[in-house]
Length: 159
Image 1 (spheres, rainbow, N blue to C red):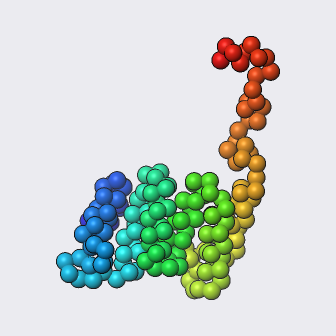
Image 2 (spheres, rainbow, N blue to C red):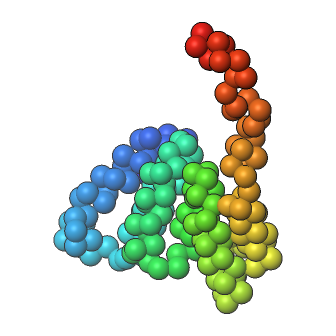
Image 3 (cartoon, one colour):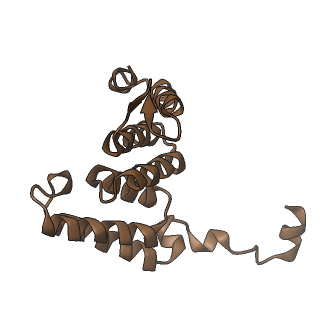
């Protein structure tokens, strides 16, 4: 099963299996004539996202999170995974918004998403906001001096 492959650390194979399930379910969301509930479709997309994230495929994971949320708006696990993807992709502006959604959700639901209180999501939101507003060289831990052109024009020609 796709979940068994995931649990065994075979993430590429599990992604392929989740994709096959979705392909077979078709546009109408049914498998062998049996309708698949939107919540289950959302879970399949979310599981695919988790496998992609484990393989470092953050853009693929983000796409699957968005598809999960299209099936089930406010799906806490997909919201969490989406924010993590946005952070890994350095899309700190969107991550700030995603963590803000989690803050609001945590304040209005019990148990809160991921079992974390609103204050923890607020800390992550604030970190994303700080990274969004930071100098890109600081975020990427680049030495600004090393980015400057050589002072000697002759050295530039030799390079």
